[in-house]
Image 1: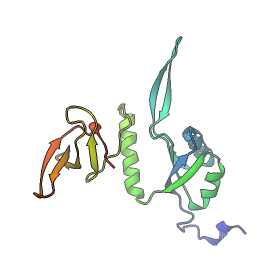
Image 2 (image 1 turned 180 degrees about the vertical axis):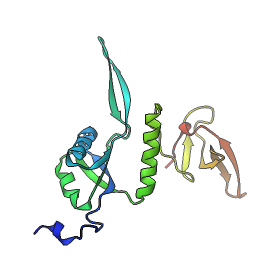
Image 3 (image 1 turned 90 degrees about the vertical axis):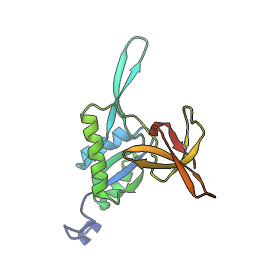
Length: 175
């Protein structure tokens, strides 16, 4: 009698949930294929990447999030995921509904033909530095108003602030 026999069929230990698998270098597609062969729900968002050689052009699919693959499996399967030799770590997804909404948004954008590109994650309230343009080097706190990104510049002693509207692509974390 194995460890699986200790759990009822409907217990959380037997139910598949989504996990983020941090993969070994360049193993995202191999991990995704492992999930497919294991019968797990999976998602690996990819984007086309053009490589130009002397004699030809080759388009291949590149993972949108290098180093990560997404799969749904029971917590009991974690050891077998590690035994795949493609996983370096497994990150639990606490907010399953929020995660699925975010993945659905990415999937919809890709299916609609959007040219998605890497962008640093900048959270509202985070201290940032403007990296390009005429405001380069200015630091402040990110705020959003009516779907526009602003950098809030404050004078603590006066307890006053001013806001500078910028393109989010111009920002990097100041930490």
